[in-house]
Image (cartoon, rainbow, N blue to C red; front, side, top):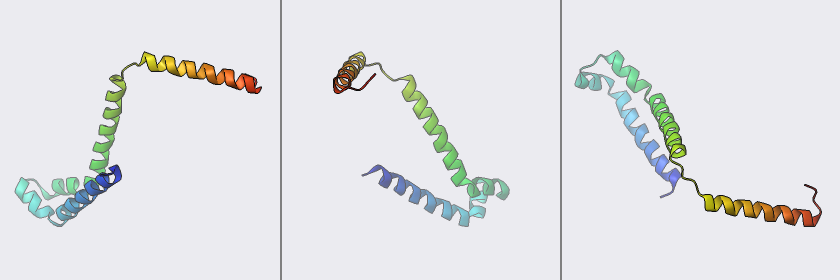
Length: 97
């Protein structure tokens, strides 16, 4: 399954649950034992809450990956060799460095 299909599936599922919750706010409030204004605050703004949660997850995920990123000295050495070879090839072609 492609990534866009996965996100599209999650989006459709979220939209379906959200639409059902919008239609049954009073039932949800009575089941949870909360006031309808508190339930309306959560249900009405659920897409905004979801975007905020996804944003926090993305930031934390990137921060974790950066913090745990490993060093690859062999790859760095190989890239440096390729840069030197490319510079030498450009100088042979007459490009001034």
